[in-house]
Length: 269
Image (cartoon, rainbow, N blue to C red; front, top):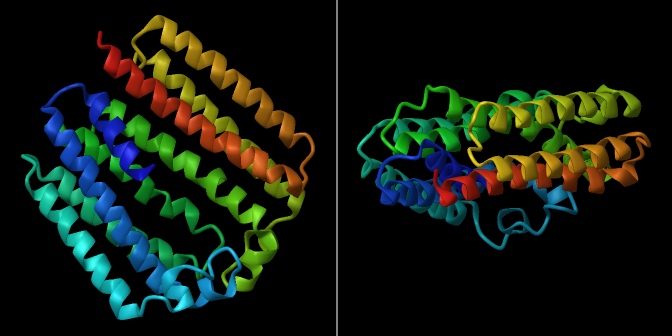
């Protein structure tokens, strides 16, 4: 999904050679993999205590910490070398910032506060900016910033609903727990507010002309309405058993946006 968001960012720019988009997407695939390995190296002790993560290679001891870091170094080097082939320095700057923020800021913050995902969401917002910048245009313009902002908002309910699905298991990690900070009903009210913000931002894409085909805009709005109705239907009964359905709907909404933007660009003007 991280690499896919880079590709969507490139297609949204609607300019530049297609090879630049492929290079940027492949580079972010390498960098995100490297960053994930470094994260698993940083959290191997807490991962080993949770059922969901105990079989990760570093947590399980299948790979040694040195082996894991070596693989991460190879992947990161490959990603950086790919980004260096692009004409603009912006993709490289954003790519390095993503790794530094994820592993140097977000991961340490997880040990301090259950709300680390909010500043940490910046990492997931950078790949579409990288894709847009790979087209040769400045990433500091409305379309890529809107897509980046959407991903920032999306990541919060995505992360917290995943944590809620594995609430008991997450408690074994020793990390600060959102469910000790807020009551269950308050948690679902917060999720509802984030979802309202997310779906409001989704509406901006056709309103600002970023979905250019009228029929596709209509299909997008109809599908989005269906997901929204289903989501708030689940929220009426804030039970932990509903987390899986709500988590699925949140992820489905982002897949819908990506599919519509990609299809719109493939259809042409």
